[in-house]
Length: 235
Length: 289
Image 1 (cartoon, helix red, strand yellow):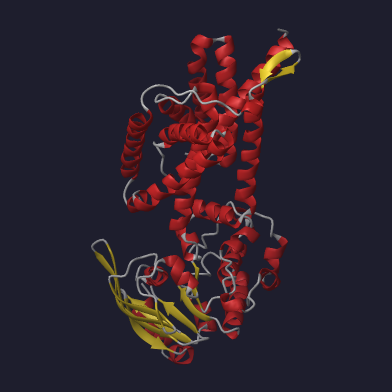
Image 2 (cartoon, chains in turn blue, orange):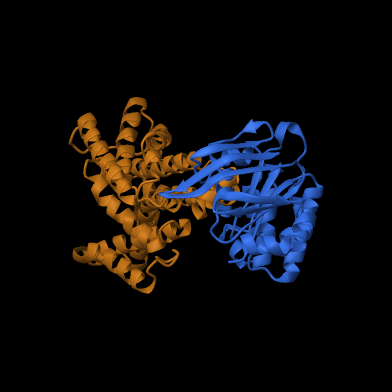
């Protein structure tokens, strides 16, 4: 569904992404793990068009979206849940969601209309008139997902969604991510929280210094976990 | 004139002055809120609005047509300027904007002088509003009451537009985080062109409405741009409500200052600004600077 080939990205003189390849099958959760600063967030931003890529290709389904500006990437069906959530602080919960809302494609009804989102996230319904800045971290995370989901995306990019959340909220997050996958959304999950990634992902990838160095299913990963951790993940 | 009548007429005077100032300040603050740039050409576009309005009124014989047409034309001009020139500068530092919008102010000023000449032009207000009404037995120009009314209408319209309309929501979202709005499918470039155009159109609306009071002249840009900056700074840069409060404050300070202490009227405005900035460095409704 989402395919990245040879993605290279530079920030000034530093060569952040050095040829990332990733092929995400439709309706699956692909998790990308890696230490701080290996380029995970840059990869997500580059897919979104927020950071320019210097070489490589990005495609969603059969559509080549390489070099597209962010709003067209979004309209092609990619939804973005950024690191730090980036909720609009002075907009209400409902208004935050409405920013992501778009006309239904080719006349079909929308899959995730506002009422359904509020059903999925009851805490947001209770706080629907509150401003984004008044929400807790967990509520903001759910709002960021709802805001992304309202566009009825094919692919959702989740960047460090568990950051700063209490264990109970992370469990709720895991439930939501799996529910979205079961509804047919293809998910890219970038995480430091290995437990969450292992629990929900269908495929695990490990990034080191701007490249993917390891890919496996969670079962295989678990069998090799101690070695893998020592080689790629622990500092 | 009784004290009460004096107070009443001066208050309505101040409100009408505030309305004119608001048209300038609100556009400036909307543009700043969205793009983090100060539009130095705002005063020049206000002046352009007055002259374009003069020509439309002279050609058609209708002030009302001028009132609708001048803001529209200047607004389109502003959107076109954003689309062709300003748009190229967003990745650069803020100085580029100062230089380019200052340049636009000079070009517009000179173009106005070449097109309409250096003499002040008398613009007749609409005949229906040329009379006076009596307030507490004192005559008062209907036109100034009309300014107050249109100020209220425009303020409510902009407020409702920002709060209720889809485009208003997208403008607010983009002002808060342009990259995030962009990544949610909002065409941020289109929003910027729209807002720059709307801001310029509002400045022109102020110009057309001011013309019957002060005549259309080459000097009108320089005086109002300072007022507009003061309003925006007092209210808090980027705040709609702040620009409204700032315009009211400065309108009252100018009118009452001019009446009671004409020699110090100009100083009062800056004193108010100083006082606000000492108490709240980001302006009354601004984020802390």
